[in-house]
Image (cartoon, rainbow, N blue to C red; front, side, top):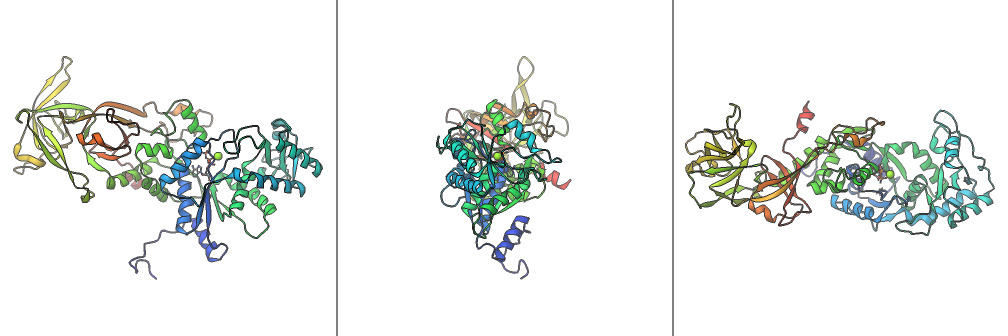
Length: 565
Ligand code: ATP
Ligand code: MG
């Protein structure tokens, strides 16, 4: 059928390479149902790169009516924590995804993995090695030179079994013994040169406590966990491509059926003006460059949430960037474009003056006030209208007034007339100044016939400005954010510490902003467009006595320009 001939048929996007593999596998009956997983290590909060992986894995399972596990890859007790487990679950739910059954943990499989290691020792495919870290490095060789076999490589199977059991029982110090696979020290692939399977670690694990004295390495645990869970498509990032032969080697040794999970690699998301590794983000948190993992400048999901990003904007962004096979950078302007696009539809418009300048309407009756109609969202009529108070004294933005403006300045100046949004035409007559010569008050007259901001006689004004009534206004703290780093790629120069590129002006705190009164009762997380000033949301620390708004993003969309250039 020709696309579009059926009303219900949506124009289909071309398949990405992972979808192609899946559709082939389903049509060839290699699998009846697909099963994916998202496997974070609980050693930090999730970032926008993880969001890409979440949207991909959970998205595939949604689109192909399959299943997707959330599996914590908790094999390194030294760096892991329940705080991270909880935050990761919250972030995935917030993005709008659900995992299959209960949450999975690699630590659930510690027994199975241990038994599998024993099987490998018994079949002569693994041995206990005594080389220390320094020696291991030397024996490993380089990408161009083969490695050297460990003197313990041909140790008796029975002896390896006894030592391995001793390792498990905590009979030996950390570093004394390792369990290694016996593969090929001359392999051109360094990962195949007798990789480490287990090491001794006397650490408290966040789930298994002190039960285990040995912990499996990522490569040994990961593919096997996929196998235990029946994962069909194990989607991961490109750096694991070189691990794939090892992934397959383990599963070939382990499998007792035809079923194999398939590892498929895609390019990780890199975003300009930020860093995206949990280790580096932890460094920013611990050295107090930011105020915690959910600081709105952080590229974490919790940071974006607090800043006012919506789940839809992140999912749309993830869709737009697609799935690539080669690493590259995505311009952060595209992410900002996605949130503008979403909030444009959803956020009610309000008026807020960030840097107030007092305006006095000299011909407006003293002590009088009125409530004027304002449209909540021109993109969505169903959002209706609200009443905005107007009175003799108002605030406008300082930048909207110039005493002696150039001709092209279309806002307020002495002798000039402008429109106050939803209110009246006003004309400036004179100003008051302080001793230093700064304008402190702007005197105007208003035209009562221009109510609602409509021209009474066809005369035109060039500027339309936002404002708030001084006696009704509420004061709020406003946090304005800029990019966290001052260069596109803070990690471009491996010799330099990325923290040297931090943008010193990434946070500006404004405590003098004046807002429309009804914002007083806005709830934490609620989003608004402050006309002409951007999208803002109520911060989680905001309260009735201390209102705090975060600016999510300005209104200026640089993406359209980039896209068309
Ligand atoms: P980090 O280096 O930030 O700690 P990681 O890859 O070590 O990242 P994991 O917790 O192991 O973090 O990642 C869980 C999943 O998220 C993995 O499948 C990983 O490939 C994927 N992932 C991590 N970073 C990105 C990224 N920038 N883009 C896409 N997927 C990512
Ligand atoms: Mg990792």
